[in-house]
Length: 248
Ligand SMILES: Nc1ncnc2c1ncn2[C@@H]1O[C@H](COP(=O)(O)OP(=O)(O)OP(=O)(O)O)[C@@H](O)[C@H]1O
Image (cartoon, rainbow, N blue to C red; front, side):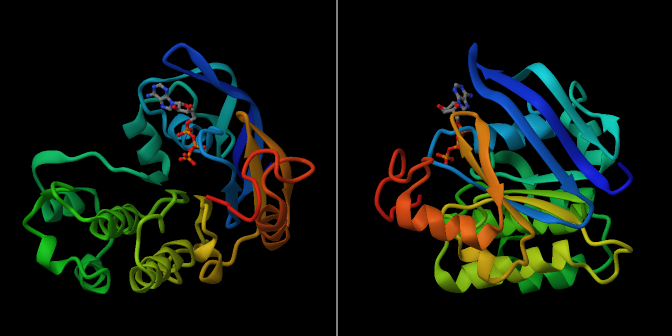
């Protein structure tokens, strides 16, 4: 138990009265990076939202434990304070709050100025949070947010989607700094959703899981799972859901 950071048992989650997660079982040990694959609508983002305690995602059965303590039922700010951070797939706009003000308010890091520069976000410091940000800018500011927050468990929802190749490298390097921070006593654990797999070229991932219809149906070596999905789709015998070599 001492080595387990996140433990999810028989998790059922309803959204808008519809059951989306139907018995998720997942264990993430300290310092490990796990990757979630699965077709559109299979419930991957819902899982991250439920871990984060976001409103509208109702846990109807099961438990979520972080460092051995139940966190299901806690408010998102309490969960964030315990050391979990989420980079949204589509982050919300917050009018009237400048990017820099927001980052400084949540930052536990001394070197945040350097990270603004590394993520090419200096020109956006005074902008209202996420308002009119391009796809790449949105993703980079989400990663900066995580870097500032410095969580023990990092949840990344498609960090590279809609991002050009140069910016993927920029983002992936920053994710590496968050996950494998030499200043931290222990590396952070991560749970990453990806369709493209680009991120796997940069981040050393320990284990992969395939999501289908609200459950994890297969787990194993990340690269072997990804190759299998590329070759045959997401279903047990291949092709049932994703079809052909199309992954995302
Ligand atoms: N706020 C909501 N209200 C109603 N249904 C929702 C809501 N949020 C998610 N859902 C539904 O839950 C299902 C799972 O969505 P989710 O975003 O978790 O899937 P996903 O696996 O992350 O998909 P993708 O790969 O397309 O991002 C979808 O059918 C979606 O429409």
